[in-house]
Length: 110
Length: 115
Image (tube, rainbow over all chains, first blue to last red; front, side, top):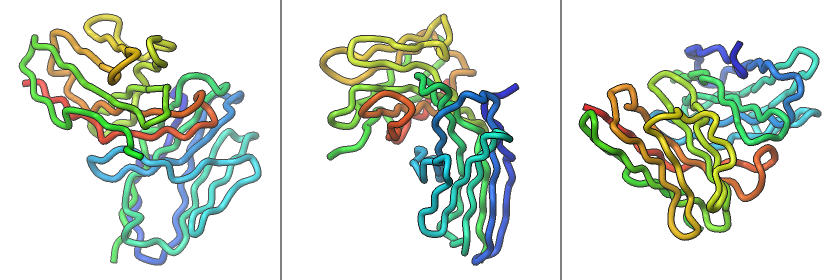
């Protein structure tokens, strides 16, 4: 079983739509969770960390569900510039490795 | 404050040649991670280094691949006798502190093409 699994999509949504991605992780002892964004042929960039209590940054909301071992990312009022691949990242045990999901592709359509 | 720098950005090698990829972490960062990304796939951890030490190389193939992070100079990922399957984007990331709570800052990557 993979450490981190994501629905690859693609998700094609109109501008202004709300879209949600989920990501599941296999190690119940995982401690740190992140969402990164990767544009085509570019490097990943941190979008937001995911805290146990959930956190919000503008139009973006991240949630953690430890019981079901998944994290989610909600994007409200989608913009064209949100088009990218969103990577779920998990760090088990605060160890050396970060495990990346394969990414979920989002295209926001005018 | 310059970000993570990688060079070359694009590298073309013929089968059997050697590839050397360089990574300079952000100023003040002493932890470096190397990842490989194949087309349509996620990033795969290869190796984690601190200055002069390899901390975790569990993701790196045992043969042909090696990494170093000398006291002076950039981190180097070296691939000997490259094969077509080595064609990928190789990303380097750096953190200020230990993994887990620290944000990873990525370089622009080196795209290796093996002919």
